[in-house]
Image 1: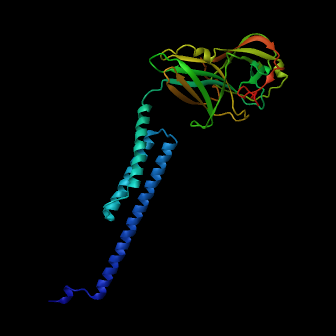
Image 2: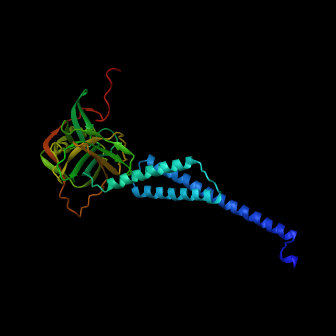
Image 3: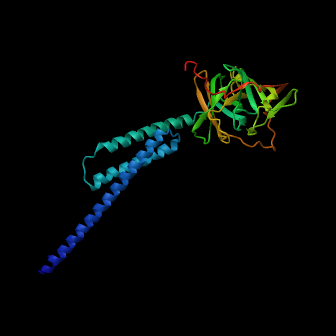
Length: 339
């Protein structure tokens, strides 16, 4: 029998063993690379999931996608551990963390998806907005009232014509509302301080002609940046917003009914040249149902279209002098008498 057919030379055996060791090292590096990549993906997806939970993200599809990717990466990681490492036990901390985050994401995604399919009870928008954007506490629209300083006037930062539609099949009574402004549709939001038009008198400064009339505000935003002086306050026309938003809310909204009216607000920053792009109107009804509607500021009225729902403010006739009134921002706090 020929021995060369059954036995390898020492050199060939050593070469084959070296190739085997190199193959094992390459194999081990590939396994380590797979473990590293999958482990990193699990950590990244856990961070993304935690961020979504922290920032109250409300896109159900994104949360489902992150949860699915997390489950796939975690499953592959476990498979690599058992198949190529031969481990019979694993540390439970990553599994518990991933399972907890995944369950929270899925639960909230289901909640968001379920609520997104439910129609909102109301729709709210700002149809017309006259925005005080001049420097200083004097503006075109001023409200007069009695305060601890005597006769007092304040600029109206935002004179808004608000519209609300009841989208429900039943009547609903609005018990409170608020308006915020922001640069982006998701905020951050700056809350506006309400000015009750029912408890104050509204004036337009710099009006020299007496007589009654109607001032119409088609849908859009009106930036009031012209400076007003004390001299302009000597010629102030008394106005009557018709109707006020609060007066409209005194009665229940009919099923699928719509109301609109004027409301006044003071800015909390009083910064000129920083007109915000978005309004957020938050409503709460007597059943404690709350809804926030966000709408982009409609800057330019389209002269090619007729607006059938123009906001009306009545000019009552008399021209009065309010230049001697104390001037303050309506939302500013009064001094503490105990200090």
